[in-house]
Image (cartoon, rainbow, N blue to C red):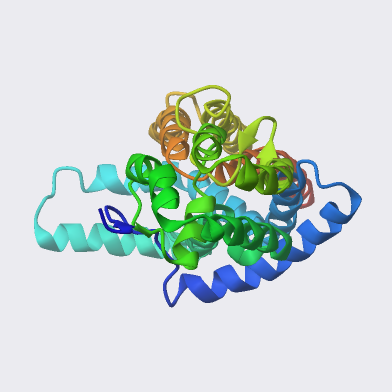
Length: 336
């Protein structure tokens, strides 16, 4: 048997996401260092929470713009419905073009854009992709974690190669990774993927000499990377307690979309049977399920980010919509 076991390579950020990940990584590293200086326990998790609040605060102006655009578009729905009804029996190209032009004119006259509600979401997508790499590969972006991984890697590299291969081969196959156990860089990548069960298996094979050297480093690694009993750098899966992360991610997504829908309905005065409200209601159930399922196979840290982001955005949504309702009421009084 050779020293390479190849199935699936670990992904790295591309030329667009890479620079974003590096910039965000600097902020994340600074937050982690501050928290770690106070207490190593749960330091990655606490850093993710604070990092999330900072990111959401930065995007707050975009959220305000998104809410304004969404609510403005919903207010135009009755007028847009009239235009559609006007052309409902006219399917020729000329009539369809006229309907489209009337729709565009209505939006332009009211300073509303179809893309206004989507643009903030599109801007945030690269951030989410970058965070995937930051949370999965914390050892690349967080100095203290990287130093811990280097120390663990050096000890594993000091283990005779045949014994190292014996200890790691089954684990590498189970995780479907491309790993050359003779390469330190590959071993360092593997260190980020191993669960507590994997480490127990490794320690039982390599012997007490190496075990005694690794145990303090693994204890430090666990203190940093685990939050509420869940490793934040690995996939939570469907086993307890990891499955808690997808459940919370789905539940908070429901809360966030519910808050958005309720506030939109209150702002526009739309009926619950309104087609737009019906569509939003469907999203209220579809999005939580989708996010919960996605989070199962993503780094748990990203699930924590998503859950905290949802809670914070739900609060922001309520505050923004209250302000918009107050502004509308004031404008209504002035017109009288």
